Amino acid sequence: MKRNKSFIVAAPVVAILGSIALFSIAVPTALAHDDAKVNQAFSEKLPNVPGHSITGLVVHYEPGGKSDAHHHAGSVMAYVLTGAIRSENSATGAVRVYKAGESFFEPPGSIHLVSENASATEPASLLAIFIAEDGSTLTTYGK
Image 1 (cartoon, rainbow, N blue to C red):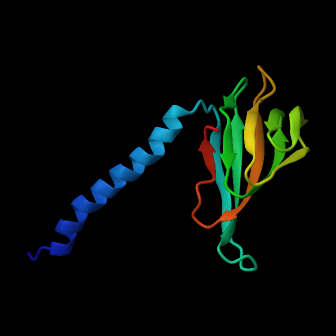
Image 2 (image 1 turned 180 degrees about the horizontal axis):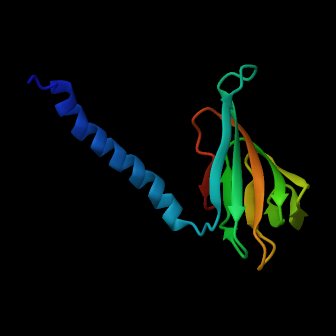
């Protein structure tokens, strides 16, 4: 039986790189208070805006759930799917509650100061649509 030498060499390298990637993802998340469950709905490169993609994330908050202050890559449009979301952005004004069917915009460079479920008894969810540079980190915690 012939052994594939490239596999023998590549396997430890892949394991190390995978560990580094998991550590780099886990550390920022562990430092943030984030009760949100996030699922990617879609992501597509924009042919008319080279180097940029449109990505949709569905964010679910259990009753009383919230996220610490954070900022996003590029521009974000949020549409509340269910329940009510309390939100405040550094560029768009004071804290406000958005109900299902309402939306809000987060301009590039702004800080999302408050992002939480407005209810202590009912879940809430939103669709966040990002227009950002390809490969950018969509959410970064801290100011």
